[in-house]
Amino acid sequence: MPARKTKAQTKSASRTAQAQMRFWLMYPPKFITTPVIWDLGRKFPVVTNVRQASVTDEIGIVCLELSGPRPEIKAAIIEAGFPSYRTMARDVCTRSVFLWILYPIYPWFISTQYDPIRFVDKISPRHIFFIHGDADKVVPVKMSKILYEKAKEPKSIWIIKGAGHIGGRRIEGKNYELKVADFFTAALSSPTNTK
Image 1 (spheres, rainbow, N blue to C red):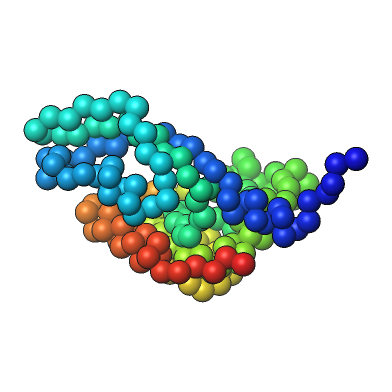
Image 2 (cartoon, rainbow, N blue to C red; image 1 turned 60 degrees about the vertical axis):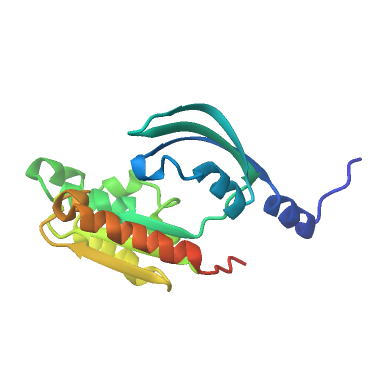
């Protein structure tokens, strides 16, 4: 009969689990002469394998296979989130007279097993960033606020004026990209205790 693994052995094995992923990287002229892949191998415990590459004076395109320890999730962005499927269904049912007939019976058909509100407080101590447009007609902004209130620190929320559903980038443009990049830079450079 095979021996059972203890919890400590299972945790140890999951920490050292290996992952292999393939990425396509595209970089602009200013990085053409920079040893990007070499730097990647020095900064992170990964084995790099170039599968395909095309580099000119204008652009570099590389298909890169990375092998290394399975990454730990250190941060999350939730854009236009909603707390539960029933809450979302309730909101949709109130939008049309034709759907009102479903209002008293829809809860019987919608499970709560995977509702985001049940899990959002378990993301901590990982950083979480909520983004929502105040003109969202698909998922009302109040739903992200409910999730934000339930989440534990570290957390932040950005309500984008005039943005519709998943429309923050269109409204904010480069500022959106900078805020997202700044969030990940800060979250990934700070230590996270996930125990």
